[in-house]
Image 1 (cartoon, helix red, strand yellow):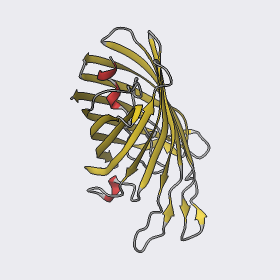
Image 2 (tube, one colour):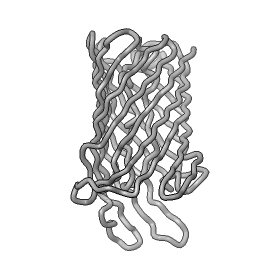
Image 3 (cartoon, rainbow, N blue to C red):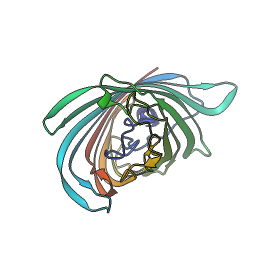
Length: 286
């Protein structure tokens, strides 16, 4: 079962400003880090999609307030090469190239396009036959087809990853940070984006070989944005969010799987709510 599910690891939505919703790496599913070692090289193509209909927001006091509303869609087309090295036994590696896509519908606006490109490696080992532990680190570019679809600065997304498998249950997740470079734009102030801290946990029940229901927990905290030109932090730029969700994974074949999930914010501050749905299609080949 591992081969039809583990290749969906190392994915995340583009980093956004403190005012936006969608927890970093919130797109992951069950078995996301259920990774093998000592395998032959192979390739994976994954298409991710998620939509968020945010009708409310959380203010600086943590109260949920009705907002003007927006509906966004995001996608990622990802190619991954998995391999091992004879000189480093019992350790797995993955190298990824991801192109993000985005579409926004709100307040009379209607636009979309390509977002940043994301590249980077991951490495992991297995402390025992039932568990996996590793690290992943990626660089995200600062460009896209529209300025509004990109953060406008280079950033690094790094996290520790883990997985533990029981006979009928699975538990995996990650914990990490996003650190961005200073954003410069001619004629405007320069800003240092807040550091993002995040964690994503997934607990699944192996109901059958085909169907696997799961629960999701996502947390994110973003420190304040610093205006380097004015030498001060922006007001209400420190945000946080906690979201809970439920979903189901279909292990359709050894080389093909489908995962769907719904999540909603349960707590937040200075962020629009998450009212989001996610889908993932995975195809694996030698």
